[in-house]
Length: 342
Image (tube, rainbow, N blue to C red; front, side, top):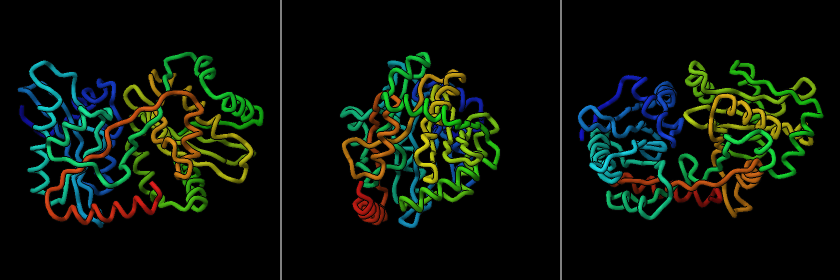
């Protein structure tokens, strides 16, 4: 096996999207988004001669607590032959990352695996010297997925009765759903997002960050903003990424002005129907929490789960320390985790 950078977009996208577990966090456009926001990236491929076995987008993250190499929900590994195991492919990749990390003078390597949370998968990382990251997560590890290969009627029947009723009620209240990538709708999303920030007191993404993300995906028609309009005003909004076999509910916001109008329910229902039209097989509601009523995501998790579906648990984020600088990150992130109630 050998590892080299991939510079051909078609080669990269064909490999990632052929994988059933493909995620937009390993897409070509997510790499472009990170590059455009000033991060250094590598698109690495693990090869057996000319056969591509695995790929991984690697991002150099420069944070106050220390810089590190980050692999978001990767590597993506091909259905492999008897000749190579997941363990052997990952170890080849980890050895390469260690050398790259030393060259880039980072404190550690962080991987958010796209692997199921099993003892077998955890052992692969432990044997390579990794440990559980102190941070709650970089990207969702407990997600909620809905099978959208079923008919619309079947999907509606699988929802909570309350959700079905609220979708119908929003339609009766004459809530209109607009699908677009025009900047006026992005600005409307962000205005509502900042209202949510003030209400729940969390750190927001800057507007330019959200805009750069939207710009990276829209030329390939992989992103859309769903806006719910009521009495001439946009009162809720959702940013959906369409990638591989899935549609991802990546960002959402809702205004408190018309809080009795259940526009968010109708908005997501329209997003689900659009995902079906595009031939997607799953609607990924992204992160949820379980059995944590005081967690900041508790209410949002209940909202997502009401649409029906099932939970999926990915392996926790893994860290490989490269030098003593990692100790600073460990202390800072542990304190932050406790303070935020995670």
